[in-house]
Length: 179
Image (cartoon, rainbow, N blue to C red):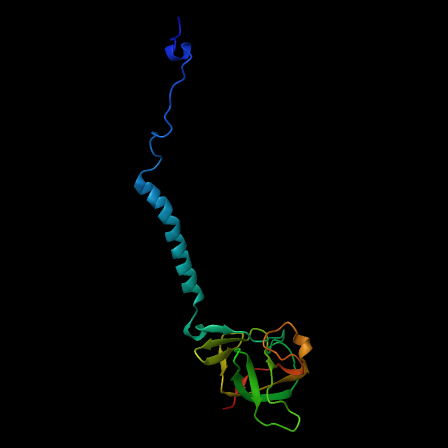
């Protein structure tokens, strides 16, 4: 039995394909969906992240950099030097204390290094200090009392919002508002 012969192949002619007139892989609507769906998924993802990361009302606002130490108040014994003053915020949103009672050689500003986990949130012009459990412990303008010790600022050279020289107050207790 003889096989059919392709007359175009015998003549040396190749079939002609027009690359511009091929049918589309997707319809116009398909191409639109392929372009729009990733953006919709990304927008939904960002919405979920924003919702989850917004937290409760107590944590809304802008984060304030607080210098912190590795000290955890509930698990370690600390020094007992009293640290007391009015909580203040400077123009750079750094938190410091103005001592309630100033002696002859006491500085005008005391720069506290807070226990591990403490953080600050600025909402408008108010700064609130939170402990490691996200409980508000003080607001700027409060007179606070705590205990700890004083060390050279160079001990915390990598921490934000500390003076270039002098000593800093390392807080080694819970913070109590007295006024």
